[in-house]
Length: 383
Image (tube, rainbow, N blue to C red; front, side, top):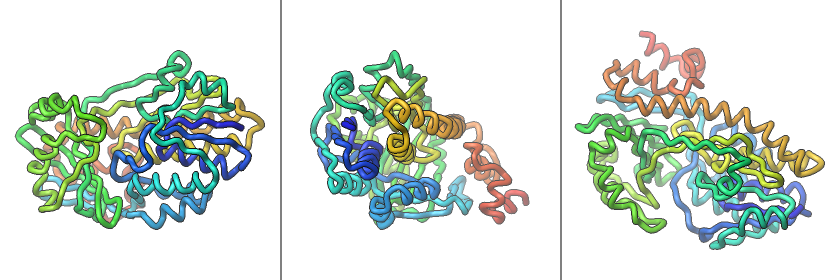
């Protein structure tokens, strides 16, 4: 098959590598508008379950990833001068930049063409020239917009604002820091992604964001060029989070305030065009990584292409396999993001109760499940 892949992020690269590995006869071209070493973002998170699938699908990619992992089992909740630790959660993270380099090298070794710094041709013309068009072109997918009448997208913008940053403070667990400021409650989501750095996300309700003065800073930063960051906000955050950072540096990379948008589509297929990753669906970052979902999509799509007799049946099988999984993830993500939107309602809870609620907010981790993961934590809650 001749396959066009729109977008050289982890989902597009991983699909191309797996599809080419399964059938060397495929002619695969990836269009990526950024340069090979342009990377926006910091760390990406994987569950143990996802890593098992990656290991089974391509040992070479998995081996490259495994060398980079920062791993943790604990979630620490820092609230009102107390810290609660819940164990048994099993996650790994790595630098997005290193992940892209590993996937790019694997694609090159297999003979996949990657056109960096190149805008993709119109999806309709590619659809006529190629047997399959895989649109891995992100949350703002031009392909999804091009065929919106078929895909039926629903884009729901939520009420919190957040900014994605990095720090040279290497966390030893997944961290939630609750900041009780004059403007209202803010929360830090932090996790290590290497032995040198951690992801640092500051999130708050839009009302708190405006009262803190970030709305005006964001307005002034609206004209920034791609790659530039809202430095005024970052400097203010350094002060707000000084106790958390403990003298460590906070750094930015295309860092600006944004509101999370939940993307849902009625279908992910239009003739021989298929959506993958954030182009098809998004899930709030508080329950995991969009990269995780995109790479799971890529694995499923490559396997369906290999197992089914043609593109039509392969795309139908892909959507049938992935849609229930994504829907389940989005339900958990919705519960989690709504909990954080309403975090001000819980700020007066007893710290034990608050810690239990933040760990179980997505409803995927229940009281009984948590008792299996960490009996000591639950016994402390019971007492």
